[in-house]
Length: 106
Image 1 (tube, rainbow, N blue to C red):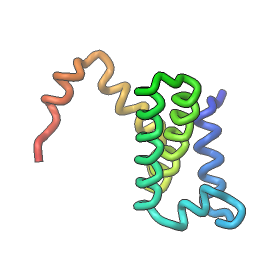
Image 2: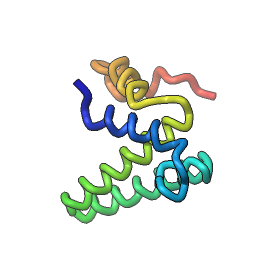
Image 3: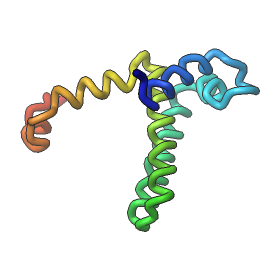
């Protein structure tokens, strides 16, 4: 059984190679990873604004936009939301403070 994120990722995979005139995903892909990252950042800021303003309806919409743009960027990197899920699974049961302290410092 697939969930909405699985369907989203499949749609993104299919549309990455479509005509940029016909697909937003293809258009964004053609513009490159920097543009994808910029769009992801914009959506994150819009979600923050909705949350700070207490606008639940807008927060849901902006959250969906954020996940959409995250999935596009991950796909461009050869990654998926399953990779993110796996990381979250590894962190489960570990204090956020302890997890952050265990990260290697560059």
